[in-house]
Each structure stands twice: as structure tokens, then as C-alpha cells.
Image 1 (cartoon, rainbow, N blue to C red):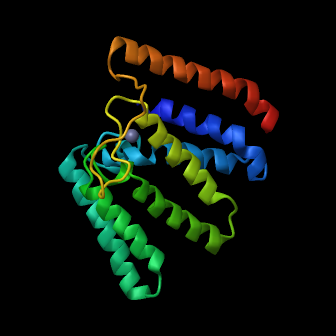
Image 2: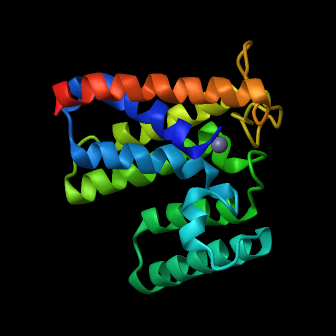
Length: 199
Ligand SMILES: [Zn+2]
């Protein structure tokens, strides 16, 4: 599924639930957009990596994310007593070794790691609902990819089998692209109608 479709699914879910999350927030909307794209960080050419990686290939992805992890672990060693940094470093190492859609970032365990990080930010900076925003974006990305023929290894590394819904879309085919565009248009219509009523 394309990044814009993931954003569409994440944002309509957020807009439909925002009344239960203290009302609409621009920060919330932005975090949902970012976390809707987050699982595809395992792909060297994904939206995030377009900005992060100097060269878009697997080797560079591995080296860059491992370097980030080493910097964070080094900082943790100096500062000490910041377990969240170790969680962040583990996440970065797993991203470094995750190949696209075959591993960690498309699993429920990865979502839990990011939720722990979000919970920490919420606790330290007294920001509200960060956990919910990340869960919506990340969770809807996994749901979106489960709608595709490829499915996702939702229980990786315990179970490597890819899970998908009974009805799926075959991406990068004429019909698949048409259905994806159709889903995107429905999301846009929903947002155009409901967003102004929630702001
Ligand atoms: Zn994905």
C-alpha cells in the first residue's frame, strides 16, 4: 500500500475518534500522519528514508540505523539510568536488520516498542494522548497492509507467517491500483466533510 493511502486510513480513524481523545488536535493529526508511515521505515526508499538516508539502499540503511543506535547507547552509557534510550536503541537495531515487510517493523511487537517510547514521552513531557495517536497511525498501517495479498508478519519473530484478511487487494495491478485510488478518494471525502466539523 502506498504511503498516501496509509495516511488516509490513519487520519480518518483519528478524526472519527478524536472526540474521545480530548478533541481534535493539530499535533495529534501530525503524529498520526508520521506514525502511519513509520512501519515502512524498514524500506530504504520509503518516505522517511528519502530524508534520512544519503544513499537509498539496504547497506546504507543498516549502517545509518546502527550508527544511530550506537550513538544512543553511548549517550545512555554516559548519562546512565535512562532505560527508554535502550528501548530506542533496540528499535533502531531491529529497523537496521528488518527487511521490507518481512520482519520487525510490521509486527505487533514493534508497535509495542513504539508505544513504550510514546508512553515515556507522554510521561516525561506531560503530553496527552501520544500513546493513542501512535497506536492509531501504526495500527492502521498494519491493518492497511493486511488488506493486501502480501499480508504482514504480525507476530514476527514468534510466527513468521504473513497474516492477511480473507479479502485482499493485489497491489501494483490495474485493479489493485484502482481500488487503492478509490480507498484514497473515500478517505479524502470523509476528511473534507468531517475535518472542518471537528476543528
Ligand atoms: Zn507497510
